[in-house]
Length: 131
Image (tube, rainbow, N blue to C red; front, side, top):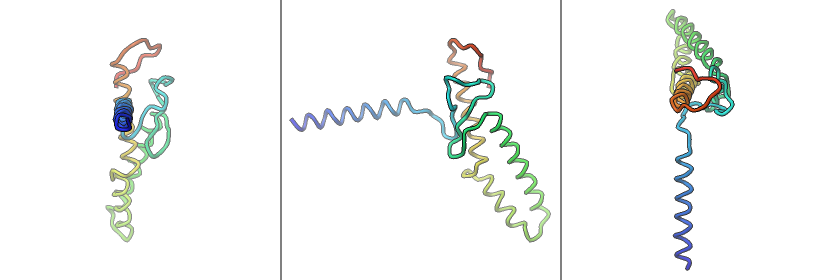
């Protein structure tokens, strides 16, 4: 009797895990904060490991961080005693562990999610612009 209970419980656990795995979102860097109540032109996005921001804020953060990186690169290229530290800062900023990488990934994940919703179709009061 115990053997049958164990088999039944294992089958139940496997079914639950498969159901959960199928329901998971396929985002790595960011996802729509509330897909049902979103503004399709400027949705709220949860950036993994960072914050929740509007999509326009993410785009402006990317521009600001790239502008800062360019200024740092110009300063480092001039040489001097601070050159090494400036290059280390650039390396940290551009690395895949840096926030710039996460922000760009969140922008791409959001665009993919919006495009998938747009292609799915259905009744929507506000059309989602093509990504």
